Amino acid sequence: MTDQGIPVDRFPQRVLRRSPAHRRADAIACALFVGLDVLLVALILLLGSDGIFTEDWMGYAGVMDSTGASYQYDCVVFLCRVEAVTVALAIACRLWTTAVAQLVVLTSAAVFVASLATYWNP
Image (cartoon, rainbow, N blue to C red; front, side):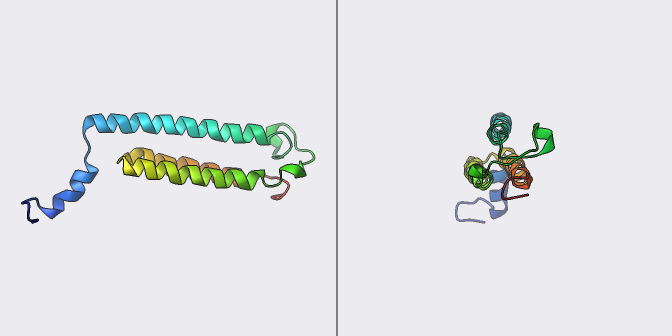
């Protein structure tokens, strides 16, 4: 027991348990952030498809553009930074579903972008 008469074992329950309105806000934030993540990765792929990424499924597997050699690395670092900021924001707001979705989606996106064949990653 604390000095205020509240059992210590109830503290985690207060942090983890949320009202129905808070759960709805979490679901809306999760859907919004995942949608923005998909658009961000699509934009990265679209901008990199013009000679930087050389995967067969992107339409052209020919000569790679050496002027965009750091593009892939910069995109992976950017995705990791976006992940850190959005997860920290979600945790600060107790949006647990949003935090987990950001971890999964942005980590997977960074790994996917890092795995593509480029000038520096044949």
